[in-house]
Image (cartoon, rainbow, N blue to C red):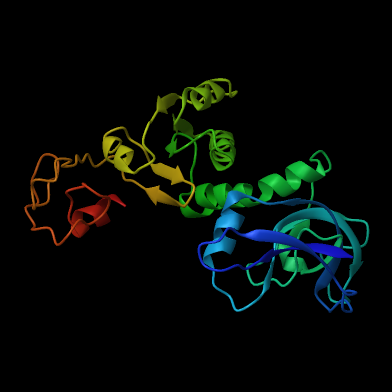
Amino acid sequence: MKALYCQQNSPGEEVTFVFQERENLPPTRDNDVKVQVRACALSWIDTKLLSEIKLEKELLPVGREISGVVLEVGRKVTFFQPDDEVVGILPLDSEESGLCEVILVHEHYLVRKPEKVCWVEAAGTVRDGVRAYTALHYLSQVSPGKTVLVMDGASPFGTIAIQLAQHRGAKVISTAYSLEDKQYLERLRPPVEQNWQWKHRDNTLCMCILGLHVHTHLQRWGVIHFQPTKRYTAAFSGSSDRCVKWKDRCGRKLLGRNGWPGSGHCSRCWSEII
């Protein structure tokens, strides 16, 4: 049985991948599920992570998002049984390569795959889907009437976040970094409320939306909360070394640049916004 692994090279060299013959799987432990893999996703985040981590191992497992069929379950497994169709994410410290015919995974890292979702779509969307749902449901608690800004809405994460936010009744505005991305967002149904084409992948847009009643700002690496009833503006010139706040000036001397670059706000005022 073959599995795909990342081979660590000398510093500065590109990551290379190799297929390695695996020995037979160990016996299924109490909470383990043996899964026959039907699809496995590999993204640029995986390759970037593999190129940056410095583990004292010659080979590192590749592929964390998988979908497949349950072959066998441990005696304490309660959520699954043989022939169930599942999708899941392997933990970062997993010794298992998702790009393998059969793997062992703890039941808590799996969920049932919806019947109408194919193997490839399940494996390809589970990570961004979990991230978007966590940001909208648990972190920002988006509800009908709220406004959500999704950066880079045409990305896989952005597309899922837009649809989940709309499903929860939120008004969605988004950004695009090319004309093609902008046209893609315009074809979504239901459409986003506003669609900005933004040339620079930075956070300066955050400073432009403090007066637009945006409640939640989503980007691939996190979620930021705003209190839009409090109107603030930012000092973009960077010439002032004191905090600038709309309607009244806080006047506190800035110790470096707190918040986003060029914000011009002290940590106290940012703590009121975030």
